[in-house]
Amino acid sequence: MGFFSKIKQALKKTREGLSSALSNLFSKDKIGDEFYEELEEILIGADISVGTAEEVVEEIRAEARREKLKDREFVTGLLKRSLEEKLTQAEIPEITYPAVIMLVGVNGVGKTTTVGKLANYFLKQGKTVTVAAADTFRAAAADQLTVWAERANVRIVKHEEGSDPSAVVFDALSSAKAKKTDVVIIDTAGRLHVKANLMEELRKMTRVVEREMPEADFFTLLVLDATTGNNASKQAEIFDDAVGVDGVVLTKLDSSAKGGFVISLCGELEIPVMFTGVGEKLEDLELFDPKEFIEGIL
Image 1: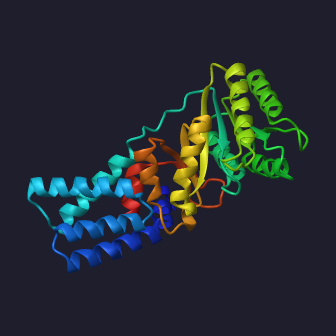
Image 2: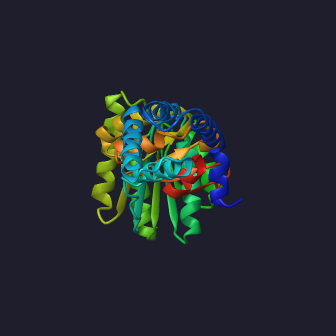
Image 3: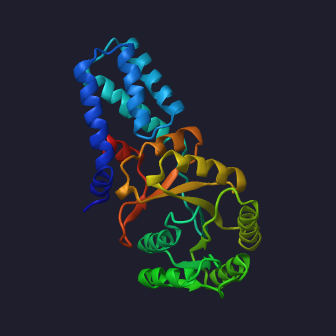
């Protein structure tokens, strides 16, 4: 199954819900004030934030009025274009090498699994990869990461449970420099975004990367669970304020009934989605494509 097919399948519930709601809306209402009010409610129901839903509907209303066209095909086309513009408001950065990628996020979003998938992704691009087991708090976290590193066939640097995460990062970077590794991927412990001491730990690891590999293209990627909806946007806002988020890796999209919060995330916070996971297998992670995402939900 190609990636677009996977995205389309993953977003099936969202697409069916939106399609059904829009069909019902077009069948009962002429395109006027009531129509636009209900359209806004439909978008909010798909986990698009109130602010973004209002903006999108107002853009459609203004364009439809200007062009004096109000049929379903025209309005649906405007909706697709407006949503895609929101998704591309935050430009997806190009990764150059050497690169260091630190994954952050709350507990249970799939960071360790994502490390393995990212490692496999870069291997497919012909790059060498080292992973750093900087989650030294969760029991057996390093063992779990070791399994993923072995599946992907990449090197892993790890310390004993309870070690200083920044020391793990330091050793991983030292090893990567010695071996001229293209990509270092850092797994970190899940943390509640309200814990200041844990955020300071992330800042410390960031300082180690910037000091030890200033020449590297360094990204802090926030791993978000697609099933958490608009709460994911709140997580992104807090992590961005605390440590600076360069992009998002979206996980569990295949089990989510709603994907609309991604549009608000990109449009309001201007944080791009860089990668998305659409399954449990090692290869089920790809670069995010805004156009394919919109085609998947509408």
